[in-house]
Image 1 (spheres, rainbow, N blue to C red):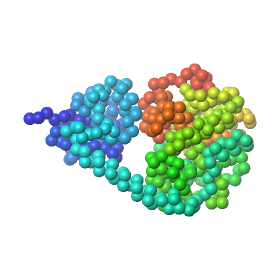
Image 2 (cartoon, helix red, strand yellow):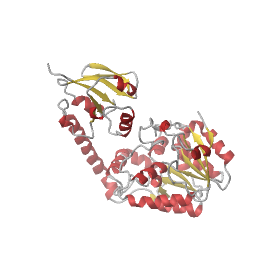
Image 3 (cartoon, rainbow, N blue to C red):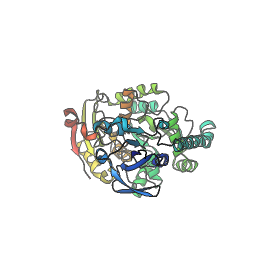
Image 4 (cartoon, rainbow, N blue to C red):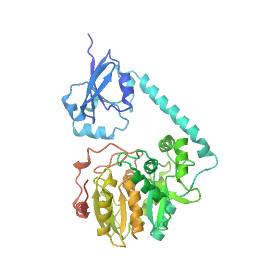
Length: 407
């Protein structure tokens, strides 16, 4: 009897179906599945499998470890640190699987074709808005926004998909639970007329030609006809907004050369200022890069990584108690930052919702072409949290922390 290859599959997300469908059980044996989800039960071909924690990988006996996830950066880091034999790893979506006799290529090819068809359908459905007459709010550029902040000391509140989803009564992000009260607060900021506050929205409603195909597809996938109309009902067509992608200056654009100017303008805003940063525990804005090299002083208030709005009053009071009128307050707290920047501006402070700026700057410095993990920092769009405690911030960073707020 021929020996059957022993297989472990890492990841039981939605794409894992195609991996399991690819297994030729005449030639292989599925010995285990591993994932972050513990004590789950998975049924495959009428056989039940216990999903083990990924920490058990080195206890398993197998010939091949098949990675079912598309994002493999965390997996590669984990495999390196835990001495997993690289020759046993199959990156299902990133290599030619036809060379493995125990894998059928059809399910993978079918999935890829489905995704391509869906991408074309999204583009066709969105074509009247991308290539026809523009119907939507006026949105001024990121450069105009930053120059306005520099020249007029304005505050900035940004609205992306997550903020709109919360205002529409849906879950906006894994980092923040929604609530009716939170939705009303966001809506009041969106419709506010405070002359000291710039309201920015994502430049998604017209041409997407400046974005990479991946970014454009993500926008089309979110902004269906129904969602578009819901946005239009919340927006004022007679108002001038600014581009919320000011904090995502690099990765999503085909022409990445304009990012340098955006980062220079940000540095001009920071230059010579006393800065207070309210950020998540592992956000670490400016850590290990030169984003804040021109600032006068930095004070950091470290906040929870999740559901910051639940401790909103504590964060707000902490900032108010330490801030001077001339300080610049920078906030990276997801959707909470939108409301917090506005409330602080109403008290006479200059506050900026910084968003993903630090991540984008790190990718710019690395000349990255895709999202990648950043040592020691949270990347909100990626499940890459195992490396965070392994790189201790330096003494300068630690000395800047003046308060930690816990839930």
